[in-house]
Length: 72
Image 1 (cartoon, rainbow, N blue to C red):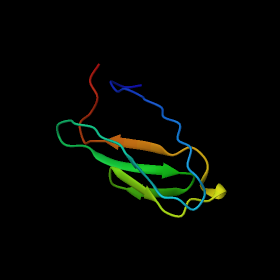
Image 2 (cartoon, helix red, strand yellow):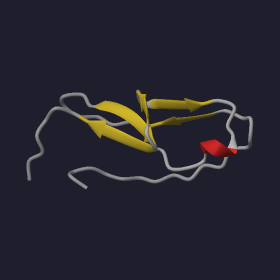
Image 3 (cartoon, rainbow, N blue to C red):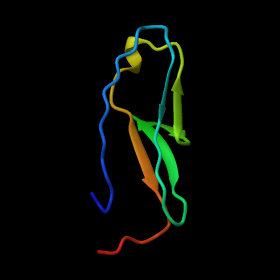
């Protein structure tokens, strides 16, 4: 990964419950953070899912970007 760190977490949530997941990062300039799940995009560092159902299962990806060009 380009100068970053990748952490993975597995969560188990009971149907009809709620869950919040936070993704944090620092950088200069400050990065933008979004969550991706399939074709869905959720802007912001905090992802909150309510009334969880089996159809919500899957991989949610936190994407962090800033406008700096990577240097190697």
